[in-house]
Image (cartoon, rainbow, N blue to C red; front, side):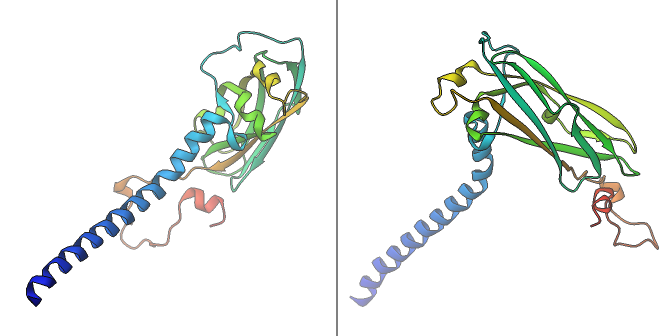
Length: 209
């Protein structure tokens, strides 16, 4: 009898272990999926000041009401001089407008940069549409090279239908430029005979790492 009673107990323990393993695997999978899902959520809703990438170049209608867009620029660990060419522009809501940023590589080697962005107030992100932007792709600058970086955008006229934003007069578009680490070719990953194995990448050297 004791042998028969222990058999169901072992089966039950096996079921519990399988359920725990499945739960743990699911939690790990959700953790890895959280970042891209959050990014997709922000892009779709404008949450956190995330701007929208416009599918069309024009809003379809232009309101007889002006709004001012201010431009801000920051760098994070990249040896570039990065700034807006103009500090602000005033246009009508729904009007497609072009602004310019400028970047200069102050380092003695090529550096690749990538721009993150947001707008303030954050709720306006869902109505700030970028038609063209340097932030859509990475940018590589040679030593001393200066590049004009345009951004084409409009403010969706539906912004006036939002109670919290209907009286909004100013939106701030902010970019932060940071370095992009370039992967070295596999062939160059093995150091030559007699060379040091403590060599850092160009980007790490530029950051003082």
